[in-house]
Length: 246
Image (tube, rainbow, N blue to C red; front, side):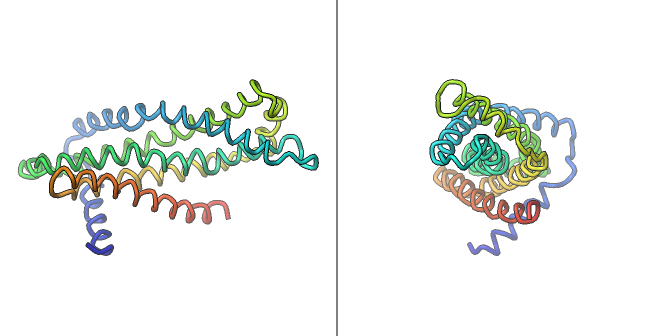
């Protein structure tokens, strides 16, 4: 299947998905389940990864920039900007593309090969709208909250390096993360992650929805969803950075 056919099928599927739900009560019931599945169940991995990345970033920055000409607050400043601009938005979304994206693709793909989607179509239900829209909306709603949690935990991880090691002092670190703070960086990260959340959930849904065949095709759909959504995240990261920060 060539790329033009994939693009066409993707937009046709999104056209069926992004419509007004036939039954709002059922939509909100599905939405609440997806908010828990995609958002709340991802908090623990976000906290663990963000803490250690913030700590490692602080330690690596300090140890590799030990120059008397650099101001003492430079380590905290670099750590803060790296976390706000890239880690808590782009790197975290790449991580969640593996967790959430593969989960969505395998769930919808399993429904496809077990003919549950065909049964919905026979009953006159818009299966794309019923199955995919709650997942997309839920992930786009939860992703900004996960990013904010990641930012806070990442900075806290750097603080712990100052508090429990002799790599950097707490005073220097706190001065660095407060120095020349630009609130727009937070807004920029939240906009990026909302776009990335749509890419992850919609592409994973697409590959799962068209996973015809057997159980092997479900695994292939999950792999394709993670790989291709990761590529699109990097592409859109480049585009959004050029648009919003240039």
